Length: 88
Image (cartoon, rainbow, N blue to C red; front, side, top):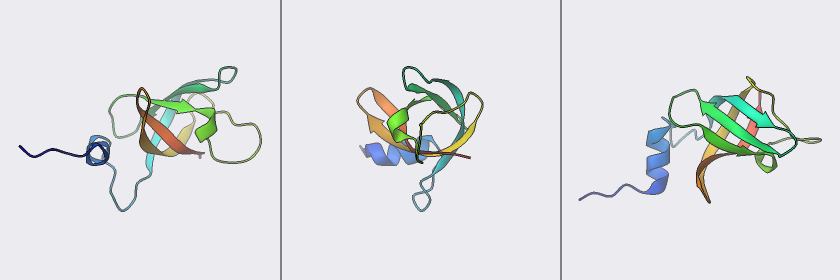
C-alpha cells in the first residue's frame, strides 16, 4: 500500500502546486479580540484556522470578514491551519 506524506496530502487537498505553495481564500470570520478566525480556501475544502500571529505585515494584525488573502497551509496542533497569511 502506497502511503501519502502529510505534506503531499496538503498539496493535493488544496490544489496547491509544489512549485508555488501559496493558496488563496476568503476570510470567513475573524474575532479581533480573541485573535483568531477561519479562512475558506478558494479551491474548496474545509475552512482553515487562522491565528493573528500568522498574519504578515507590521502594526496591529487583524483580518476583516470577506477579505481576500493568500496563505500557506501547515499542520497545526488541531489540524490544518493557514500560515504566512497575506491580506490582499
